[in-house]
Image 1: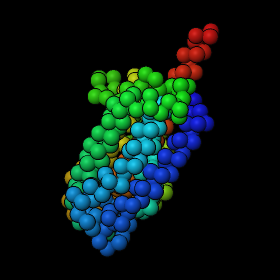
Image 2: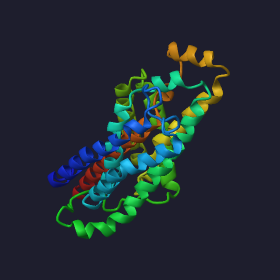
Image 3: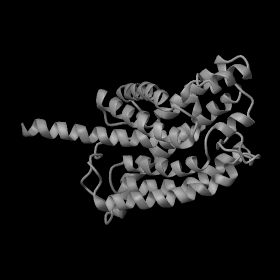
Image 4: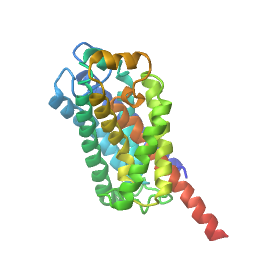
Length: 290
């Protein structure tokens, strides 16, 4: 079920404003040599400063995510934050620049750490928005819509079914995205992550129906962490890794940056869970009608 027009306008405006604010971090996150591939770990301002800049630049998107979650389906908050971040990830370019300026395969270990940083930051944001949206909603009654499928959605500490649904999503997402990613081109990678994790989230939520998709939403960063660690320990020398990279035998999941998993991957998951809610609603309605 698509959001009502009023809520679609709120989401669209929030994506535009949030995306433009995220772009304010572009200069700080760019590497010292100006090459492509944004990473918190080798930003020219330093890792700690880069994290602080990302938080500051993303604050408007987080506030707008709270607004969209408070006026409709709670998933809209996650979609707004990660969807607006997609603009920054796209403007940063592909991973090629990072691979050229880093020492390989050791350069994948900092990316694993970065995946954890993004996972923690976005987990706090996603859960925080869900905790606050019930308090903010009464004040935004004039923008709120009652017709949405997220009334029972709760993004909080996961239980067993939520963890299992997230595991299914991660495995399916890793498999699909590894097939879809065919080059390091930023647009191709973002499109593959968006589609791959969208399908995977749909599968995970339909396989284990439950109302807490927080692990599903964060599963792309778990996949990124495993992929980076696997590549870092699988190659004894730089030449061995580069040989597989240039002959297209490197794990395709390793061609995506953490910021791409955090933006395109999580946005795809939010869309997939939303579609799963729609299909479940249709199935339930059909059963009741019958």
